[in-house]
Image (cartoon, rainbow, N blue to C red; front, side, top):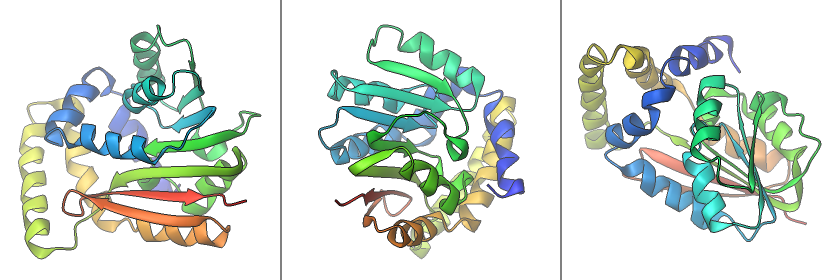
Length: 226
């Protein structure tokens, strides 16, 4: 991770765990649920799935419901988020949680599928993909999802206006103030989608990309073709 980007992680997440589920649903106008469903569609039949930056376990739970017999591991580096995920998903016997940095994974296990939502923009593509490949079985697939800055001029204007509104909202929800101020800056500057595509191709993965919701979000897949 670039130092400045990595510094955003504790600022964004140390104080937002309790309200995360509600905020992410409301601020995306429910699109987060739609995006998660699109991620699920791309997961092939698997016996083991690793969910990176699992947060409070929103995607992790949906994966468990679709693959009740699979071994599922959720990884996050923020203790407060993992605490909520463990509590929410305590009844899901096929899920376990581990506190680790996605770029420094050391799980001693290889998975059929690795997923992540909202992680790519915080990581260095080369480091994250190499970390994933060390934990991916032959024939496995990496599925990465995140926000992107829209290219369409009209959509971009609406996007920028919306984040101005969120900045004002941040004064009423102090724990989210930094997120609403810094996130749009990060999304305008990051080239994560192009950079991860290049790195995936470099390591011989078959790459596919799907943009969503007027190109404000994207899912990138890299298949480890045997």
